[in-house]
Image (tube, rainbow, N blue to C red; front, top):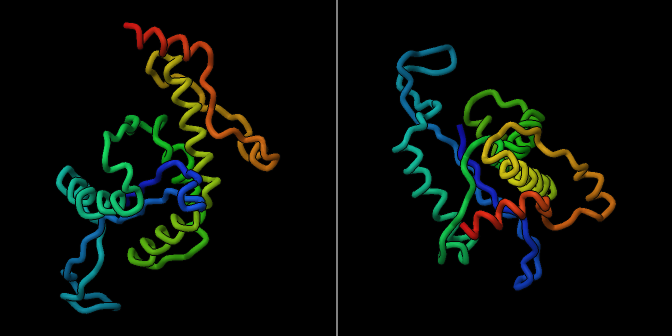
Length: 192
């Protein structure tokens, strides 16, 4: 299990560069001495195992790795309130396309142990092009629109709008325009 964090890619006018918004990927692993010997190692050799992911380990990961990465790479975000959608698969950009893209790149390598697998996943994460991340955020925006139309439910098919074709043609807009029905629902909610 790994914790991966991304934000939507943006053009940074101040630095004149494109920031891909990949903040990091960190594994939940532990080093323990081997209980039994095998053909490859004697008893007591330090081996890497999957770590447990619970409230305590997740909190520790956030404090030790995620928050310092956010402070380092996005200092302007640390000054205000951070809004983020729920972690359900239909409203999580990692689930909407990034995990499958990372996995496809990771499977090009052949790791033989957990350490090599962790390195393969990290390399695949950092190799992701900004266009893939942007496409996932596009899907997120489309899913948010449909979620609002569904009354907060998830009984909708994810939108397919041909993002790759639009991007090749240079016609992919910066963000999704919400439907008139969604705009009407949101304006009614603001009034209430």
